[in-house]
Length: 249
Image (tube, rainbow, N blue to C red):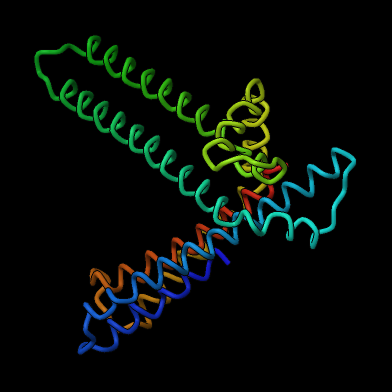
């Protein structure tokens, strides 16, 4: 269901491309409807992941449940799952923003040092090395943070009377001491799915060439770029879903 909001956007750039008289502002009226659709589909998608997590937990705890029973139990928590997903998305955005800022600052510093004529090669090499070390440390720190939310949906799926914020805290507690193991599992899953991810990129490139050859639009046209973005994002999301489900225990 997570693909439904994206699929609903595909006609918009096509309509704008083929109908020069289309009123772009009229599509703004569809934004609230699309946001509701996105929220509902995202909530259903997170609940489906939580159902899988609860079923696995039940098997490990020797308390198996049927899919219908698990779905009945978790259905009332759907919007709590969505709130949890939204809070986690904000955390990820902030973390990635910090990483982008660090990369930007380091790139600027390295560029200034490299262009400075008064610095000798030895000094520049040392400063560049320091920048690389700082970047690696920052990246490791961010990966460790993200790993702590690897099972963000499990606490809410198996525990009662827990809020969205509390379940993120529980994920933080439960992953303590297992960061290395979780990272190894994720890394192995990435290696296993790497051929598929490469194939996905090839397919995306082929589809992009087909769209460029068949749709009467300038490749630099913002409407055409929007169409390419939606297509690429959808394919990337599909590959991420496959990776996520193959790497999650």
